[in-house]
Every structure is written in structure tokens, then in C-alpha cells.
Image (tube, rainbow, N blue to C red; front, side, top):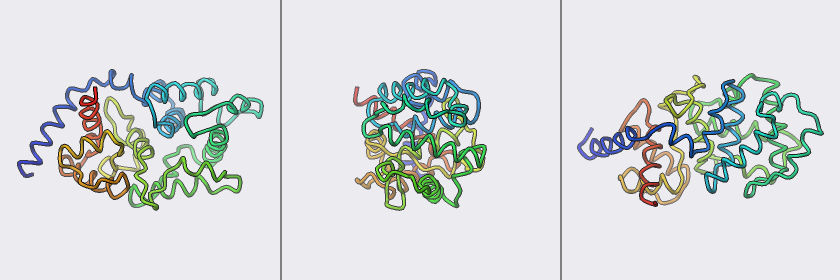
Length: 251
């Protein structure tokens, strides 16, 4: 490891060491799945929280909480056992461009998924994270009743999307520490790709970990490969440090 990389690693490690997990969780969408203990409940709540994760975090948390409340705080039981009458309340749901049509489709697909498998993990198959995300998306929309408008809410890395929200969902499911769950074992933390948004991008530029200006999959690969130099076994832990660094500069 050259001196420049070592200095970056030391600074980011210091930021990580200073993060208080509960303080971070209390202001992050991961707060939603943190209140569940059953694997399927964690998966479903985390999936919705990650898919809705654009805009202000308070609004993301508020709207995901609304969905969990409508599901009786038992998302897996609701997904599997709801009646048509139970779905009426979802017809009023809106989060930015994610509306009731999208929400109802998600609920139905999740039911179909759990009828076949006991974990969403089994739908993320592939040799790389990119192929896993593409395969998941293909299965998610492999239904005749899939609304065209809903397809924009599941990113498509085959079209060079950065897939920030899906990469964040995988981080939550795969990494294990006091913040992330680590309940999926078929994907290694070393395989993960970094969730890329404007905050992480700003910090990555500052630390010389990223040069590509577009927020796309090529940038995700460039940044993730840079993070591998800092920690080849758990590179995406630095997503947290990059976010916190950027957040501290905005305040």
C-alpha cells in the first residue's frame, strides 16, 4: 500500500471509529428494518426503505414507517396473507414518483417471490454484483401485469445505472457490524459495490478515490475498486465514512 492510499485509509478509518452506531441508525432509513428480528420482516422493510431512499431522510423514514404501519408491523405476514380490502389504504400512497400503482405491484411480486423461496437472497444470483442485480430486476418484472411505469424504480445496471438504492440494500443485508445486518451469506462483503450518490461522490473526489464525473455503473466500479485497496475483505464499510465526511462539510 503506497503512502497516499495509507493516508486516505487512516483518515477514513478515523471517521469510521468516530461513528456512534445508534446515532447513525436513528437518522438513517436503516432505522426501519432495525426494529424487526425475523429475517423476512427485515428483508421486506429494508427493501422498501432502500427503494424509497431518495429525498430527505426524514421523509424517507416517515413514508416507510407509514407502509410498515399499514402492514400491521408484520410485513411478511401481511405480504403473504393480506386481503383485497387490506390493500385499499395503499391506494393513497405517494413518495415522490413512487405511487400506489408501484406499491401494489411490489406487494404482489414480493408475495410471489416468498411463495417460491423463503428469502429474497435467493433472487440475487450471479457471478458479480452487477449480474446479481440484473437477474433480480429481470425476475422482478417477469410478470404480464408489470406496469411499465414501475420499472424505473428498480435500477438497471445493464444500462449503466449506478443502482445506488439496490447497492445500499445489499450492503445492509451482506455486511455485518453494529449498523449493517449481515443476514445474507451467499454474497461476500468483498464482492459488494459502493452505493453512489452525490454525498459519497463528493467525498470520493476529495480523497482521490474517484475521477469519473457521471454517477453511473462505471463510476461505481471505479470507486469500489479504489476502496478494495483500503480493505480487500470489507471495502464498502467506507461508504459510511465517505457519507459522514460529506455530511460534515454540508452542515
